[in-house]
Length: 358
Image 1 (cartoon, helix red, strand yellow):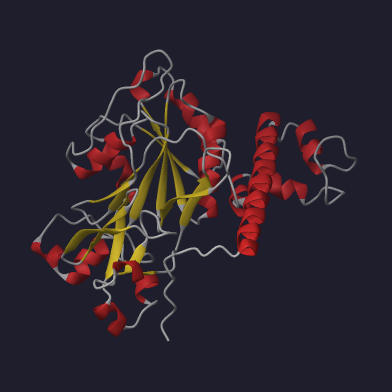
Image 2 (cartoon, rainbow, N blue to C red):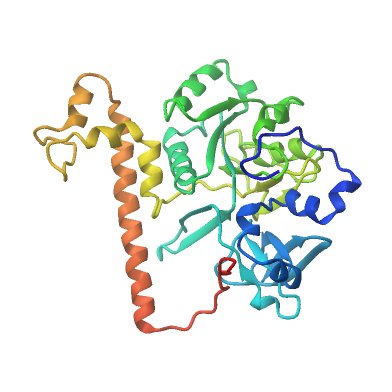
């Protein structure tokens, strides 16, 4: 199924999936990628998808192909390559339709690529002490900036007497975002996610450790292929079970990415995502008297007027201002760093992007 096709009923694993078209579509292949190469190029360098990134190697899958190749710089899980069998390091990266990234933990502020070519990001959190509206907003902003559909998943509803309170908080981020509450271990859990998990789609589970990402992946796959662990009773925090990002190809033809827990989500270069996530505040600031209004004590501040009338929540405004400042600082730091690297003229091996079909 191509991205703009209407949803179809998930298909069971059949011999038809062993033909080239079926295998590629199950991996997430679409016209977006097919249009980037001629038929001759596709025949000579067959398309493959990166399903795992290790320290020194990549796990790739394609038509009747499942192998390990040497690492390439500038790629991440979910990327598509035109695979050069004779010289794997010369494989060419196809233009992405989406990319989720963050500022990596640590003092050097490097940019970390999380996943490429996603259609939907399931942002998973638990109905317990792990729940954080601020963290959810960070994930949603990353997804919006990448043009990936965010869906908030509230797990462990069996552990709370008032799941609706969590639903209301999550929905306050945006009325346009779908919020799904479920028990990840329930047999019905996968059914709640099926609308986004059709054949040809790529979805990812994002969230902290122990919120149920791997459990939900197992539920969609219909088996217990991924190990899981319980959370710590003392603080509701999870233990790392998934240690690397891995793309699983389900019998239904949907590709599912399971990721390690990420508690630290530093934003970088996601200004458009913040505008969409905080669309109400972004729209209000357009009516402020001064273009550089800090929304504090300036005269003619439309945001402060909305606060006075009760239309804007003060904590939400504070979270927005914090994220905008953080994103601007990290974006500037990375841009300055790239300029310094270019000035030093350091040679850097990277996988080349494939040019559009002529």
